Amino acid sequence: MALHNKGEEKNRVEAGVLYLVATPIGNLSDISERALKVLAEADFVAAEDTRNTLRLLSHFEISTTLVSYHEHNKHEAGERICERLEAGESCALVTDAGTPGISDPGADLVALCADRGIKVTSVPGACAGIDALILSALPTVRFVFEGFLPMQKKERAERLSQIALEQRTVILHEAPHKLKTTLSDLANTLGGDRRIAVCRELTKLNEEILRITLLDAVELYSEKEPRGEYVLVVEGSSDVANIKNRATETDGMTASAAVAYYEKKGMTKKEAMKRSAEDRGMSRNEFYKILLEE
Image 1 (spheres, rainbow, N blue to C red):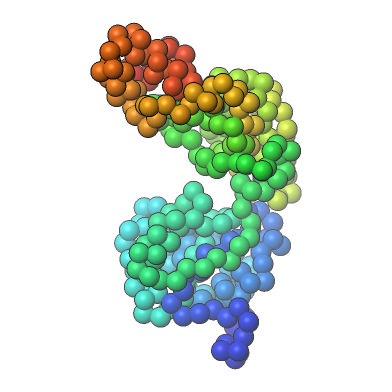
Image 2 (cartoon, rainbow, N blue to C red):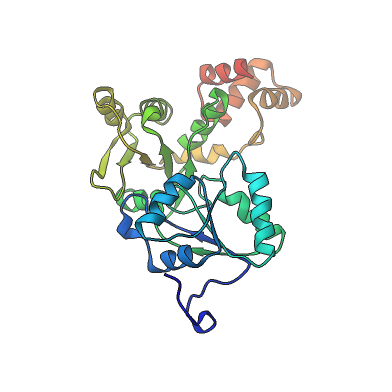
């Protein structure tokens, strides 16, 4: 697929450049002409899963050399990629599906290149979070991407308490085997009447967009087994009073540090715990559980 007269060619692949190449999230027809050109003409392709990317390249009869770049080897592999870029080679970075650098180690490679003065450019395309957002029928003017929720209980509870007070539309990713737990946690923290769009298998044959409440989603998946990959788009909070209280002196502190902070200001331990719970939009019981886990 390589073309001749590279020097005169539009969108030619340049030496020493890292290309962030978006790939389809389900429908192979969504790949762009420019993406195919860069994948075919780059000196090498760095992939999160080389087996998955090899299938993509083979489908389009592209034989560019693949190297592995993922969460577990990003430090060593990132250095090797930068050395090759500095030597004048070009690299196309891809993730398993969608846009690299979003909830994947591509962001670390971009930062490393920036530190070393290596040119980085993007070949835009599919992005599951944005696709879900525009299909959700929820407000799109202001939104925030949260990716996957933390698994550790304390961090998860704190993140959920922040999301509960978020006015912007919230975008989350979730795996099928964790969906039920996440929907239940969201309903318990945000309230069952909060609207959500449960987006499944985007751009694929079995694409499904459910625009319901959190309570309805919990009830639905108590009887239905989740299948495929999910993006959850959650309505922002309309509780203005609580939103205003969110900007507090203890933002960013652990639960125990927040209590200690208010005690130093003259509050009793009980008063400090109550105030710290209010800062996080939690009940005292919820806050106490987090405090015990620290």
